[in-house]
Image 1: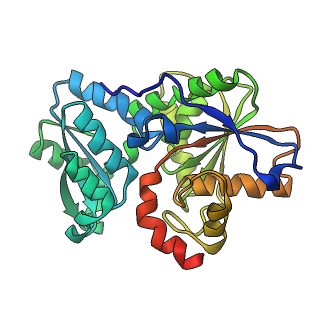
Image 2: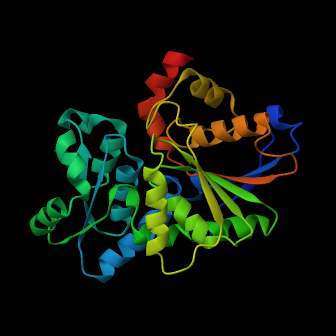
Length: 305
């Protein structure tokens, strides 16, 4: 059983000088501090997956990720906490096993299986998954990023954390999106009067909308909040960083990384400055954690600083 140290994540107002004259109130849901070892939102994506795996008698969890994957990192820690074995199917060469992310994962007991990029692309193919089930009959297979119905179910609870901190004192929730599962969960958990803006961190227009719609359609409850994806702030694509993003992160008062949280606040800044977020708006930005990934992105950022 995964047990965070506190019942709810903190919700903090942020004072950022370039926004002071905007009359936009911004609060930050600090999921990055709620369960840091599980990269913020990863706790919500994994809690029901691990509980289900244990209830069904699985002794192992298996999932997929890149060499600096927040998901692989979090799953390794979560499995250790639950007394389960873990196997990470990692895209890339075995030489990456010594990087900080995968070193942590192995220290926590995760076994790693490195696969080629072409094999990794098959991670959603049913025949490939069936082969893994036959090879590892004791393993509950979790999709990349923890993005399945159980992951979405956990992310519904994020709305409770916002309500606990602010009551009804907000209009719009903004968060970074990689697979759309966290956004879908938040949409399901919010009342109809609230809006959710997802900042796409990869080039996924059309595809990402379809993923969110699929998550919502599979849910047992009716979607509540309104939602929209923003596709102008990926800064080149997934795990890409340009000079403007690196310099923004360097000057921002919260610790950010360029894959997820940096792009969220970069988008929020651009929309406040342009007036796309109107004066008087009450925004909640969800800091979804993933700060461990900064270790792999630091050299790229330093190139621009």
